[in-house]
Length: 243
Length: 339
Image (tube, rainbow over all chains, first blue to last red):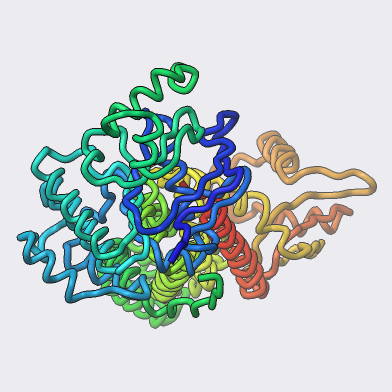
């Protein structure tokens, strides 16, 4: 099945006078763990917010999951989004969060969620805000995966986590990808993506600089790894990074 | 994947638990506030009604003992009633600000809207499913509470010391109290969406509400219907008198100027009374009566007491329309501008 999880054409978003994202034309095929990388302020969160329908484009348009308009009910049914800093309702318990999610989504696998939280040792009672950062991230990820999404979108998912929590989190994401979930995650930390990403989108200063499968990009740019590739590209094109 | 069958939207009832879980504390606070006030008003009202019944049962009513009883009633009950009236003016604003403003502001401030609005229920439906039930609940609670206050305050109207159209009391009775609570809630919701932070949104709600109340009582209420103008000296008892003035020939004199003239004239010509016998010979005149017999006319512009309910429906009506507009604007903003 050759479906594009993201199809952007001429997509742009302006905040006030400044373009956070400009002239973004992009097709990301399904079946990958796609890494959206770039320096801080490159427009990664803006692109993700547009893809999940939280933001309206100032120019162009974006379709998800094979032609569904971003933010439409059909699109929202198939996408699970974990925003930056995993904003859970801090005063709700894990059980409450499950109940809330089940009420507001079309599909929710309660059994999966409960089993997974049990495995992770996350208590169902007690406020989510009292959990450790790693547990909060895992709770958010569990709720997202219990929806059995076609696309899992993660905005800087591990930026706030310690190395062990980071490793555990990425292991869960990889397992989901192994089960056939397309993943789109943004990060400004390149090392953690080395192991997981099979597709790369490089953004800087609001524009897409590189996009393609990691294997193709490494071959054509004669680089050994993702980090080297991205750094080399950004160094070679200083207009893309310097202010 | 190109064949898109539009899924039916998730049923509204799915939001019931969510709204309850998120706002049960705010609703409990509203219940506690109105409950505490009722806990005072109910026993105080019983006492007040009892004392008034005793004072009116006194016979003959014109006797000194009965007059004293009525004066005692006023003396001991009107001042706590005044305090309650002052307190109640703040209640709709408090309910509106603390129940209405956080509905959207808290989501936007903590970032949880990114979760709630990407879940498939749809964000404008989510907003409507929160605002409408909460608005109905706080409005109904305020409406029931204002019935209790109306009952509590009844003796002062019966006695004639206060009138229902008095701007200080008008907004606390009938449908107005509930309507003001609804408007405050809607203001809070919109302020929360626009300002996106809980505390500033509460502050702005309180300020805007106070401004609207002030503007309404000072300038708007008197124009709900064209006032009646009369030159009769006897104005109906429950009338809300706005202005009075005097005319003679083509000349108009304000009540204030007239009072000054009367005052200074009296100071010049008032007889000095030395003894009880002298006092008996002094003829007292009803001054307005005297003046009208001598070509003056006293004019009064007033709203008759019978307009209480029409005025209530006018005020309730425009506040309801305003609230619908504000909630509509909030939902529209949620649809338009998110992250």
